Length: 310
Image (cartoon, rainbow, N blue to C red):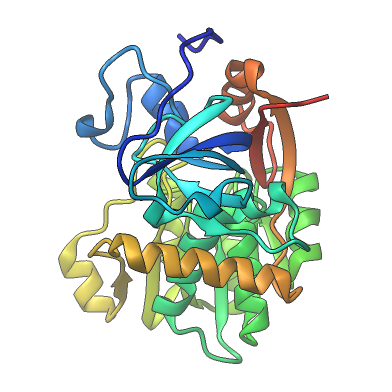
């Protein structure tokens, strides 16, 4: 279902540019779309489709009304939901973010989507010094960034992940306590050790997310950002109210706000305060292999496609 093909080079329309892609972003939800099981049916594209919603590269051509001075600039950008798994991609010029020279392209692309998500969640949760913050999938793309942001905010960070290697990475990024959530009664051990937590960043959903919710102290905050288990956690409204828990989420930011969040994440990386974890890369023509690795949980941090891999 995911194969490499030669197609005609895309042309920019008014207000658009063509990017010579160096690096394409991958997200777990794209594996769900490819499998025909997206979080929402509206996410299924007409076929045939080129997946990929984020790329980094060099502007190769501009359409009508676009400054020709953009040609040759190193940029990252989100697309309109697809078109990124390619050597050339068309993007709206208004969404381009220029990359500073000292930032590697792979790191910039790794922060494009995950960085803005992590920045948005961390700001919404309003983490305070001394609080206990639980980050699920702590060695994943978003999770690894949330560990760093929570640690920088002065929180005591608990990271959950699958396997010794991922737990070790979470600890290196700033988690003071790590636990494998595939182990039976992992949440009971945390409760016995910590009593409870103030903030949960739920990147797994399902039973794992529900177990993490139950660890929240009264007045805690619960932030769901992923569904690696295949389903978001379901929590009855009456339980949320009874526990006095605040659910973080809701309104999707505007494109301008998302762009500003991505720029903020890139700025943190340039300043040395945020390090994206690029765990593995695949040549563009091996996108199917990348999807397979993500689905069997054989990846850590961010997975990227290289359009011009050596």
